[in-house]
Length: 111
Image (cartoon, rainbow, N blue to C red; front, side, top):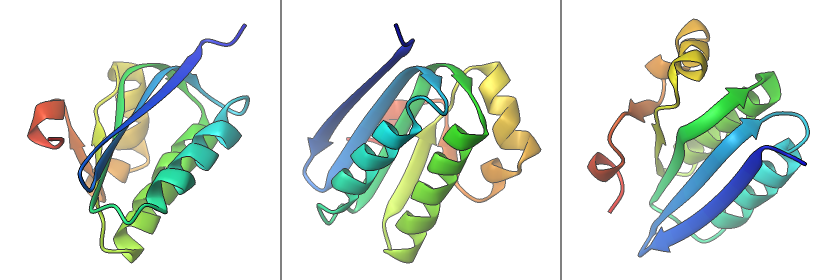
């Protein structure tokens, strides 16, 4: 049984994707499909909530980075709700925290 759950919600032209558990090779295709499906809805804002993430490997990091790139290319605002310390360090080591909005407070970025 996978330690993984993915939930989505929308509010107007904004979408929130909540990922819980492990974001790794086993689930990366599902996450990618969900994100690209949501992005096709002409969003102005996409927020990915990683606050309940327990583990993320390099494939998970790549999915988040790719979503940020697509958002930038399409004029969409993009934000990540900060994951626990171990995963947060991966953002800092890869310097993704310097090229995307990362916050500890979901209410500050999502309606």
